[in-house]
Every structure is written in structure tokens, then in C-alpha cells.
Length: 121
Image 1 (spheres, rainbow, N blue to C red):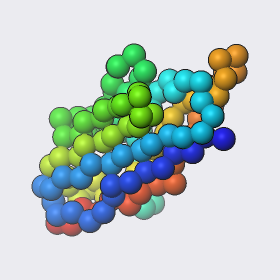
Image 2 (image 1 turned 135 degrees about the vertical axis):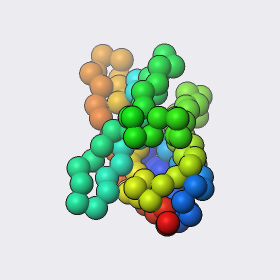
Image 3 (image 1 turned 180 degrees about the vertical axis):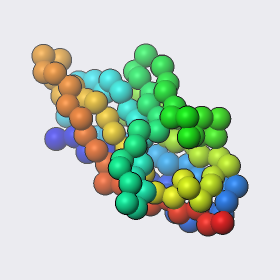
Image 4 (image 1 turned 90 degrees about the vertical axis):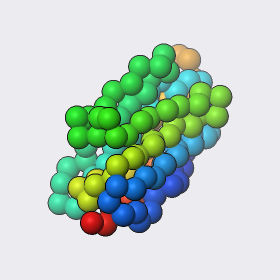
């Protein structure tokens, strides 16, 4: 079974920075895409950034220029550096990974437990 463990959330003032980490463990042949989603109270979960195994990245417009996603394939870990944080960035942040457990199996999606990020004004 694949597990994703997140860390790095917390309370920060507007304009501040936080760095989230997500480490994957368990039986894995290959992790294809790793990414971050967030869900604010009363809102749907939204995709904010992804990093493919080949090195391509995607950012939602709402975080472009402020957040940076990076990945360490050797450690099966993805990071999200969040700068210039705003109160509207307050949400639970979830790590997601598309993982092939075995080479002959299609990939499945796995989720972390979520980490709270609160930005005060």
C-alpha cells in the first residue's frame, strides 16, 4: 500500500512563506505525477500545482509566480514552496501522487491526509 505523509503546514502572516513536504512510501514501481491540491472551507478541492516524472510543471493561475513545486525522485518526495501568502490561500493542502505499484499495473491515485495552512491578515 502506498502512503503519502505531508508536513510543513501552519499559521503565517500575510506576505509570509511556508514550505510543504510530501513523502511517498510503500510498494511502488514508479511515481508518475506528484502534485498539490487545496480545499478551503465551503469550496471544492482545487488543483494548484503538479510535477511530472519528466520534469514538467503546472501551476494554477491563483498561485503562479508565488508558489514553486519541486520534486526529489530519489526520495519520492514533492515540495511546495509558498511565498507571498495571502489570506485567501488559507485551506487544507493535500498531496496527490499517481503511482504504478507494479510495471504491469496501471497507475492509481493516492492522497495524503492533508495539512492546514492558515494565513492571517
